[in-house]
Image 1 (tube, rainbow, N blue to C red):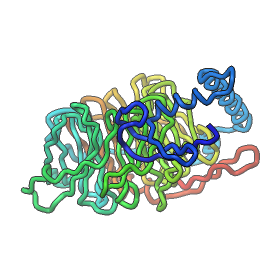
Image 2 (cartoon, helix red, strand yellow):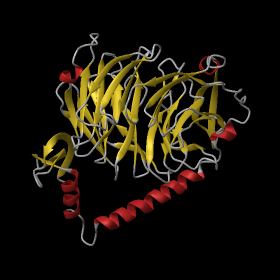
Image 3 (cartoon, one colour):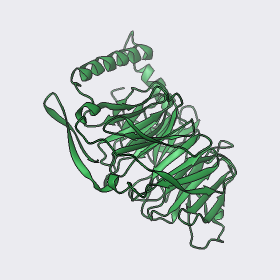
Image 4 (tube, rainbow, N blue to C red):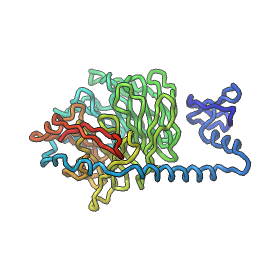
Length: 430
């Protein structure tokens, strides 16, 4: 294997097994070939030293991971809630539903806010994507699609008239772009353009900061970076051993990293330039349904079927908080932070949205109203409203008139020390 180098390339038939899949360019003695990940693994087995097997190497890898975790735990002498003991407790929250958006005929699977802070887009099991005016409740666009499971949708961050959505029924496994128009009578479905294709369902999508590139996650166990104009695969990310259910791009101007979570109970952080998995966290006990970066980009939260949400700091390279209660027995399906980062909103399969105090680790309040699983929660770009989507076929917009501004404009800086070394610095509202 010493004469071989690997680089992610395109989507197409494998030179070895002929199966259409994300490919890797393998240069063997300066000769390029295109192989899928399974064939690459088989080649690795052929290059093992005498007496070695792939299973033995995996066992050795697990042993090294355990030793690394033990060494990491020796340095972890304090938790986030202990550091925040002297921080003021949040006053009572009064978050109420102000708008209920009805129009879908089946489960709403995803929603996203436009950067204008007013419009929302939602995708549903009824095979439609709807663009809403969240203030007037008007439906500005309704786009019928050929598949009835549209799992994800997202607005482009700069060109607000561009929409992305994807789905998987009939195993189309595609991700498409629709340029929105001011003409509400225009046939937008005819302008749909396919950008990405996986070998299994597409579970999530996110535009990069440039608008010209798109990240996708898939049930084929990979994430991929695509060029929006040409549809070319720019980079593929291999490291998960099961379905990837969620991804989130780092909230920075460069946006060179993203985090993903999936059915292998792992949350992986990736370098988009190299395609390498640079950090991995494995403390959940069931599928990770959602991952979301902290507003500063130095940490992220995850929501899992094990009924917990967890908070990981990237600089400390560890889990620093767990949000759970004995009374919560249903899985967490989605999560998002308030603009300041003090609150974590988490949607659950028991129809509720739990609001967690990120610093204290306690539940601040519970939001009721949905009549089925909460599939998505998203805070508006200006931080003043919370949008939620549910399997009850509705979307809700909630906010607080009395106390909402307090959690946006009152900030403190919290320093987190481990063994006399500064590893965590938060700027949060109180």
